[in-house]
Image (tube, rainbow, N blue to C red; front, side):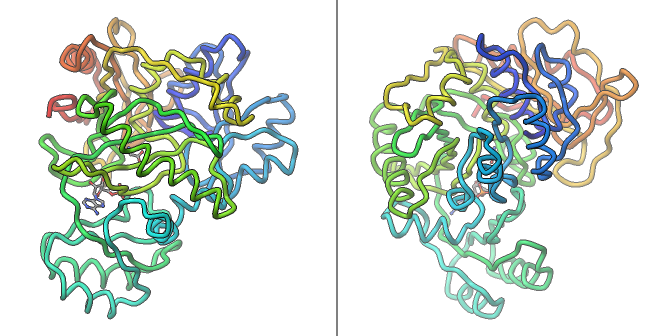
Length: 412
Ligand code: AMP
Ligand code: GLY
């Protein structure tokens, strides 16, 4: 389920399993449609009834959910009530992403390191609080906001404006504001396959959230990613597991909502190598999925079944030792207004890269742009610079009107 680069990478990997005959992607994109053993079906991921009818009619054995909205709205329970196997967290467990105030209270209750915070339900109380702080100030909308709910304010005045605006707009899903301490450091994506009690990590990865080179410009869904992340050594990973991952799984069991599914820990590693949870996502990351799936050697279908059956303690995930780099090609203007419908050329003769599609669509047999993030050009190399060189060589072969991309993915 889903239509992004993350779903293309997951569908591609599932289709490579000897146990999989056919993968359907609802609704998919131009890239999933062209993949061997993969077919698009034109059903919206929020239309649970049609999705379940379709799964029945095609005797679908396993449904894998890409994006967060269906999970937060309870698709796993809906499928299970209809006797269908669907991999992902329950609606209650998906609150780790769906409700920031739930996540923060959970982190606090189980003593998992995170930025200090307060929750506000009125603008006046939030403004009064902000006046007692020093910048930068981190303001987050509660409820799902598709990555557009976080503001890092450089001044108190800017913070006041953001607060006033959020409370006057009150978009649907808005449940109040969180104000939290700013943590300086290096971001890290730690994504795990979880079966309730046990987990296996999908290596380590890092994405590039800002629109422009050097980490400036607006926050986006992600302009590139790579895996693995070399600054994570065994000691740091052990700390992540002991202070964050294990207490999270135990905490969810104690809350009566054991977590089963992909779980994304958005982490910040500070200069003294202390690690904090910035956010949880109840799904895979996009574009982190693309380099991770390039490196994953295990059969994704088999390991998901192991997670569904609670057998992860006896399962291993293995990865190619090489580094994978993924460069996102976007439509000019993204993450704000952009055009779609432009033909994409140059994908035929790429030798060194796998191109995962995000916003693309085939119209009258022509592949066209259909979104802000268009392609994730992904390559492997013996080290990050080789992977980066191969990815950019392919990026330079691809052309569409208004294309834009960062030139510094994989180079810090
Ligand atoms: P999120 O959507 O929660 O991942 O937030 C978007 C971005 O804002 C993150 O990737 C971080 O770069 C930044 N951010 C969020 N919370 C904090 C924080 N408490 N301290 C520093 N940066 C943060
Ligand atoms: N790349 C960040 C995310 O998927 O949330």
